[in-house]
Image (cartoon, rainbow, N blue to C red; front, side, top):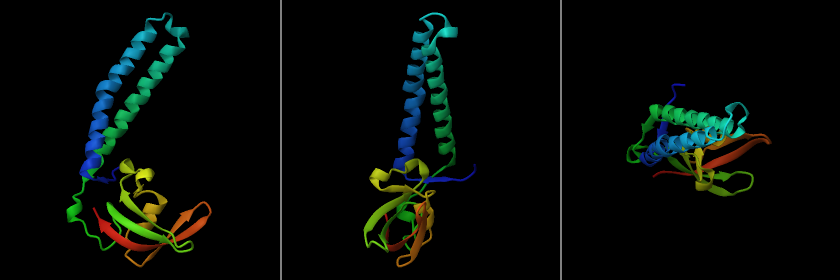
Length: 158
């Protein structure tokens, strides 16, 4: 996958901190768990040892995935972005055309997405539906229950 991961400096810094923690504390804890399980006897019938090795494999997989994201990361300076249309790092206020309800989301990379913080992934159906839209335009977002129309009410950066 050669696609870039556009993110804020804050998001990138969080990614670096998580990766550092996994490489230091995470690997140390995994090694300790394997050593403790190994001390309990016969490895061929040691479920605790198998579980510790599986956990170590999952940890290494996560480290590898985070390193891939960092390799594709491109940090965007929000002060240099244009707010004439919805883009990555835009804050977009949308109105459900049918219900009349408004909500504001920030469009972010997949690695920064956090629905509780109202940050949605640019790769999500909502993110893809909103990209490129201007204030006043209507985006149709496909859901399992059919398309939902959202009018773009406001776009800001920051």
